[in-house]
Image 1 (spheres, rainbow, N blue to C red):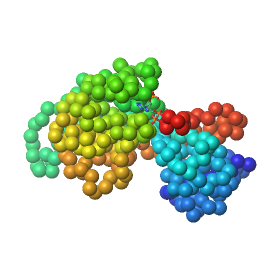
Image 2: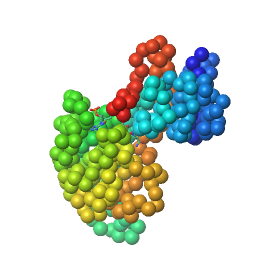
Image 3: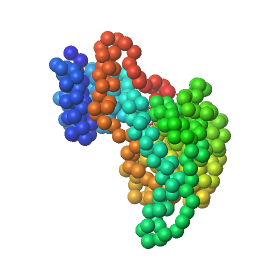
Image 4: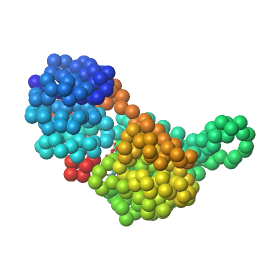
Length: 317
Ligand SMILES: NC(=O)c1ccc[n+]([C@@H]2O[C@H](COP(=O)([O-])OP(=O)(O)OC[C@H]3O[C@@H](n4cnc5c(N)ncnc54)[C@H](OP(=O)(O)O)[C@@H]3O)[C@@H](O)[C@H]2O)c1
């Protein structure tokens, strides 16, 4: 029988995953762990590791490992794990499952900015009644960097709400529904951001995306444009972003992801009043949402079919 190790550092979550897997795969040997120590009785026999936030060294101990399934859409930690045996396959959750929630986050960021809700909160704190003009989202151009499962679903949601959407991706693929124009490659990144009122990054963290949003790119943005990051902090030169905001070269930022999480107390972002910080909440992983996808992949794995959302390890996403 195919032996599965479920891992999450959050114990109730690990147990929930195990319960759901046991209900869907009766009789399959399934162990669960929340620490490297708890994983020890299962690790040598585990053919599949399911979960996320694996401790350093865990993958290297899995002598029978054939397949890792990550419950998150981001896989950079496993791709770069020196202990991951090269022949082991890696798949991940389908971003489309998380995309409706992430679309709501982006809509909230855009509407809160246009309706100047932060200004309202500040005025209210000071007991100040002062009129200001609000903006219409429907007149805005939003650029989505990363037009994969999540980015294209966000694009469709923004288009449905009347916004003009442009995109930036790695390939020259056809624009997804609702996207007016697609830019691709580093050479077109500045042109892409220069036409946007909002630039939303949903990029994965790879060698190629490291610090793509740098001082040059922020300099090419409009002075009132807002940068929204729900992809990964690794794609942003954070000093350059803080500098662009401080010196009013861009309008501000709504940031859900950072190079270092939790965001350290020393981060410049805490002190910037045109920045909204959220603690990596835009795409929560709900066990009941992601387990059915794994079960379908498990069926495919057992019958030798192509896995869904198998990661291209050379490309990194
Ligand atoms: N904040 C959160 O809670 C949260 C939750 C879920 C996911 N995420 C992040 O969102 C990322 C995207 O997820 P997804 O499911 O949409 O992934 P995906 O379907 O693999 O899409 C990735 C997109 O990024 C583009 N891309 C990759 N490398 C690029 C490069 N060097 N230059 C330009 N574009 C590049 C790809 O271009 P092509 O289309 O040309 O291949 C693709 O459009 C995840 O990797 C994760 O980091 C964050």
